[in-house]
Image (tube, rainbow, N blue to C red; front, side):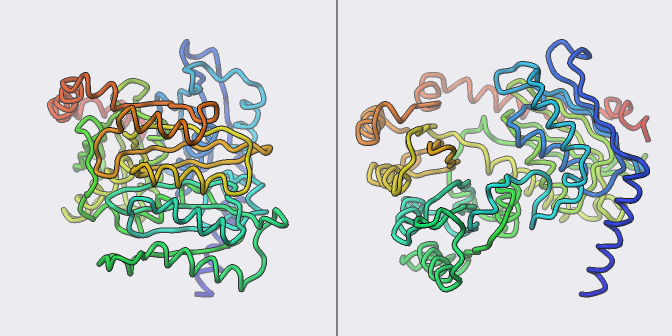
Length: 455
């Protein structure tokens, strides 16, 4: 163990030396494209460089519409077309400066945070981070929030994902009396045991032994950790219990490219924010290196094409490895895909608020499929994705009842797919048919030549 640690340190020091001799160059150009800001990154390459760059962009909630990737040899060259959430170029000088400064800093390429790559909010240092993974069930988040409230813990931020009847969450809490991280180790143990018991449940679930709770101090990148936690939990290999429309399904093809000894990965899926981060994160954590690639999104369908090898320099070795990669990429995309009713709660933060809101959802017979919880400047801003427990559309009476109990002024419906999809079922089917019909039609080796010419 000692020798491997020394080796990692030596590798980092050597990488830093090479980096100082060849510092990264980041160019942000608003004139090169009419519809997007172009970000060019040239840097010494190491495993994970692509993810680090993509994560910086994703953490700012910017949308990558196109990307061209080349990292053969020891040099990384990448071009991103980026827009904001409203579809506009990035004109804010502070954001532009932040991107450039961050991508050119050692903190981005040599992060100190556990299991993270890139930016971690400094406020997390004053929080206790709780990681939860286990079998999902209706009302689980409500029970977790109630337990934390009873233990005098305030939820500062949280990210909750569900997939294949499993749930993973990263929750950052503070001690109510002090507003700081929980320091008392005996109390930390109580929190951990209480939450683990909630995750295991009392119904004799055959998967209850798989519940896991980790409590730690310090920073972590929530979305990266969620991918790692669900990957370690093998959600990609589990039977899918929850439903999902065909329009959300992902098509992944993995095939050989013997000309250059690569493995080619092609992904067609419904487009959504942070899609590129999710796929690159999975490839990186599975120890694959992207040598060339192209990404085209910004419309209803997203197209991603990668030339990869394992970190040992070899392409995929077996059919079993090929199928596992397909499963993992599909799962990575589906974890963040949310087809439920999207509700936003914005109000003054107070003790017990989250526990009360999630209890209303539970008592209304609704299941939380995904949640993003944050507090800033005394204000709570929470987004929930909800479905009816049995997977049926949420009716208007239930929605109105929730708004009356929570408050019309603080609860807003951001997106209700049930109202539109119920009126236009053929549209979803036609999109699925389009994906199926065009998947192999769109695959032509001639289209790869422009990328391979860089090698």
